Length: 345
Length: 256
Image (cartoon, rainbow over all chains, first blue to last red; front, side):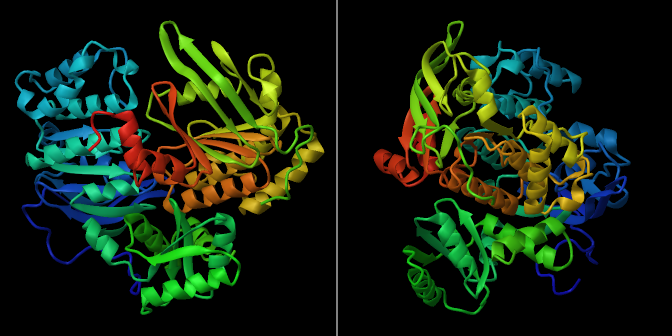
């Protein structure tokens, strides 16, 4: 397993986790029959941190959150949340945890106000008493208090769910894919709210399939197929990209893709928004020189493009790490994808 | 992908989707308010908008599931108001939420859809083999769809929606939740489909994907607030990213 640069954080470390961590997990593993949903996951989240688990559906994010909030018990490994063991101390833990499940789980036939009042009463408190905590979200919900939850827009539903998860003033929040299926602007507003809660000192763990949301987190874990591929700050994830990366802009996208994949040093070529991203397999090459070389390569095929060296995004890093996993013999799907990316299929 | 598709009975330059003043009211609420747009054969058209802007209602009218209150539209040359049966036979539809039957095998799904679309058994058999070969799923034909990884399921759903070689395909958030490589492979399938002459109308919440479209529209409160090539709509609004444009159009007060 040595020589797998991507899987740096999945081994059980020798050192004991920091005792003041808000959350830690060591070798946490969960199976459902033959399916290994979570495969020896190890990480730590500091108090006050906004920590993101980024990755596609089916990667294990929901299973991990359910283990941490005491809804599942692990098959192997252990974890602590606020110093409490989710298996042994579940009742003490549940009072301190705010959890927003991935599927909308409020009462569709109750109004906004009724849902919120209900959740407050379950925890023996009232909306009035917790107003200081929920105030920023309450203000956005206020115009809709009489509306049935089912009749809210997607973005508003998510805000109500967040408000319900906060109404007992928890010390830590677990938000499982709070922005899935929500439009780009509502997603931005939701993250603005999380930023405000973080500034108030709350520890927040959030999962998302949207790679562009990584930049809103203090640190991120890239999650795929039950494993953590990498944990770091978003900037460090980008900076660690191990190959020269170039953006290619021009017409005839299919022709350009084929031409770039035929390049002898193409490690991978993928569409990225308005451009194509070309990763060169020569780690030590000078990006500016490569840009010139690539422009000439395309011109020889009557394709005219602007080529410029760029910094890797989280999504570039994720794709690279998926390929590294596949090379290490894991993840057949990623392997197939990587082959397509390199034009070898 | 496959050999170029032959579309009988429709000229190459005829509009695949042609909507004029299309409107739908529910009681006093106007969900789709006088929209006019078209999609050409071979074009990838991005159909964008915030949640609740009217995209789904518009799409339901275009696939013949909902009658317009006013205005008109043709899809694959047929009127949505009077020929919805013919439309459904000439379009494909795939949504993230529903596309294949989980409890049927890969093969059963293909045969079921082939039958619904009125293909002969020999056609189904032939296209099934080609489809599975292309997707690398030949060994999985007896696998239940629910046992497939999400990415494969979505590529299979897309191919099944193309089984009857429709002139127009509607993709409703086809790439939600899949990994970044699968998402890109999916878009390459879209390009190949368009290159073979099929018109593609696609909705997405990933604004980087909107950049992959030949043209796009952004709906706000039931109306089309911007339309054109990705470069054109950005230039007209004086912004550099679609994110910025989307924010400005959907939250006029909030734009920085």
